[in-house]
Length: 134
Figure 1 (cartoon, rainbow, N blue to C red):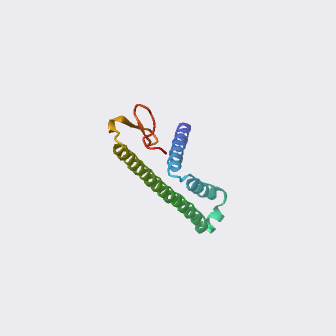
Figure 2 (tube, rainbow, N blue to C red):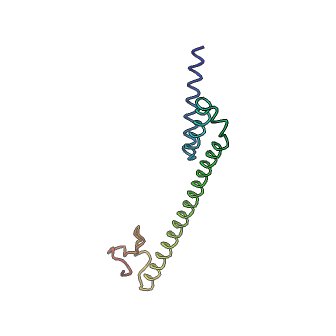
Figure 3 (cartoon, rainbow, N blue to C red):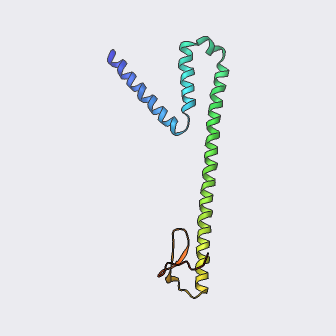
């Protein structure tokens, strides 16, 4: 009998650990903790209060889940903005490099005689001097 109790306790701890890991990834740790405290702690220590104020306790849970949903929406908007900014930066960098290469061609410099630095500056391959003065 004691063996099954220990086995059940180990399984419960594993399930709780797994639940909190998943909840942590989804930012649902606080609502999960609230649900566990209200459901288990409330039925053990305050059963009359739980019966009388069930609507208020559920409202608290819904508010917490709503705040988590708002944080998901905020993160999604932030990720979309960041991605768009990165794409705009890459496009502007490509446009700037192509403009510098066209300017170098107008000055009679061959395309093979230039290199592009990491910051997007087009420099002469042999001297390392920028093609266009800043």
